[in-house]
Length: 103
Image (cartoon, rainbow, N blue to C red; front, side, top):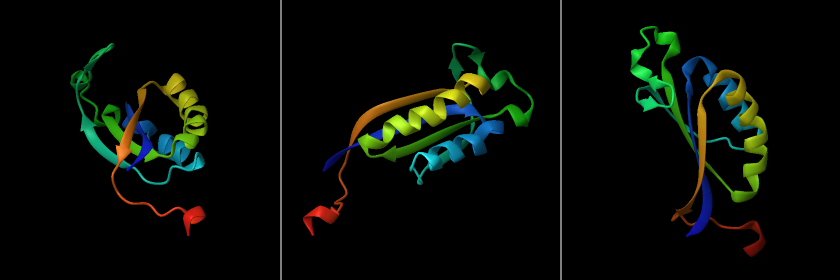
């Protein structure tokens, strides 16, 4: 087991490509996207929007702890400009990962 960071982003689907580009520029190349997310946040019910262009997406990705600073630097400006939220938490990955240094 080893410590990794979990990145959870809820944002407008219209900005999905910009957010995924920001993750990629940060060195986070794997992710999962769940579309048509509805819920209630500080701005009210997301499902009140009738236009599909304004549907929300949920993006989840994992990275090594040292990658978090570039993620925040690339994602924060997008969320500040276009809206959305991001949560980062510590989690444990149970998959065995071979370190190059230990080989």
